[in-house]
Amino acid sequence: MRVARTDVIAGLPADLARKVVRLFRGREVAAAAAEGVFDGTGIAAERAFADLEAAGYLEKTDTDQDGYDWWTTTILGNALAMASFGRPISRRTADRLVSGLIERAHIYNADPARLLFIHRLRLFGSYLDPSVDPVGDVDVELVYGRRNNDPRAAADYAAASGRTFSTYLEKLTWPVTELVQHLKNRSAFISITTEDISLITDRTETIYLISEDASAVPLPDGARTMSHD
Image (cartoon, rainbow, N blue to C red; front, side, top):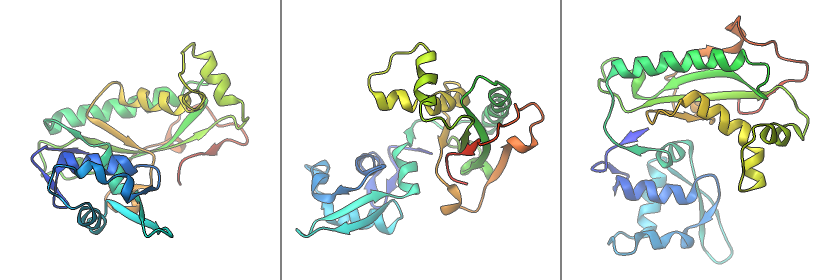
């Protein structure tokens, strides 16, 4: 997802809207803990949260005994949290990025040394509208799985990479981080999510399935999909 700083999202300047949803992304947070982001803006926090909810970016999860509302991001809100500000790209460039993405998926799944496997890649967003040129970025849903379900496998895999990790969590999530980095290939214009995009759009296009990839290493018994499906 790519937005311009001049855009208005749910009545808020785009950069402020993104800043707000980033505070709630992937966790439940009390509204009171995030109200400081509106200091000096002249915008009432309560109204902003309500407008972001109405627009589908935030979801209220609870009201605690002290009367404070708790919020989390929706899938659309997560997309906004990951949004980048910058120039759009031509459709020709986007086509090239998609071709490279598919090729890298084939390469990844043909490598028996990888702990994970790519189950499916689906496109969504502005790229699927042929009348849009230039486009924002290439929005991709990734569904992946694990070849080895041993609880120690992720840590062992990370250790074998020779990398240094600042936290144990960073070490455990290295296989997924590595997979996303491989698919993006350092492109700032490929945006990858592991969330179920069918919850926010019915306009998708599957560009890769492991079941249709003759070059993919066969999955061992017990291999399972980790992200949604």
